[in-house]
Image 1 (tube, rainbow, N blue to C red):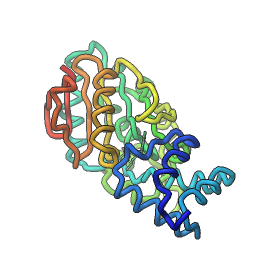
Image 2: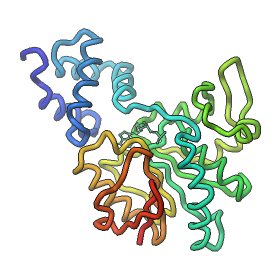
Image 3: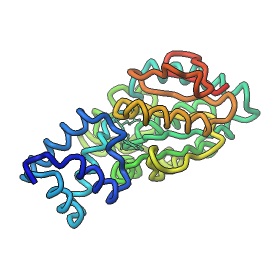
Length: 263
Ligand SMILES: C[S@@+](CC[C@H](N)C(=O)[O-])C[C@H]1O[C@@H](n2cnc3c(N)ncnc32)[C@H](O)[C@@H]1O
């Protein structure tokens, strides 16, 4: 095989190994990323790299980790969270007798910064014992980090001080740990959005800063599945650089920038 002309074959073999379909991720961006990692480890074809990750669990995990781009932070894009607290929670509360019954799903939760942010905001309305949130991601390693609740201070730079003071303990110079009480409010579970069944009856779904990596076809599939997953009047919360052009097709109506409601 000539140097790096086996990407198509690699995608098929990688799918068989991991059930991750690289065809559903934007090709140029993904291929550039993969090539740079494969080269870094000294392989000259994608398939040679694939043979190695089949037997080398550590490199397999490194690769998944690298592919999935886990960048996240608490209270990322503060204006979105402000709207979430002041407009979306009250909107959802209108349709529910009891806020503690609201079903919330953070669908690409990475290292947990996002679902934990939801817990801290909800805690303004409810005691922690009554809060339970589902958080999923394709990347198990990221969720293992989430469960430890240990974060560098750069992950917390946008977090309002009141939350930092209330829910975190400084454990060393640049490292903080989130309280166990908050951690207990989130149930982490592995879920590939492009492949596995979605939970049902959700009132709020967060899907932020992951859609940017997907093809239009994959995004359409995901929006359709989110639409089926949401209860009537449920809300989908997307990232600050994302929008849904053909929202009517999925029975959504925009209720604010970044927020769509199931009709
Ligand atoms: C950039 S992070 C976003 C984290 C968080 N939502 C935020 O906005 O800060 C993107 C996450 O999407 C996850 N991801 C990528 N492909 C996925 C898939 N097919 N199913 C579920 N999660 C996926 C990655 O593992 C990664 O943790």
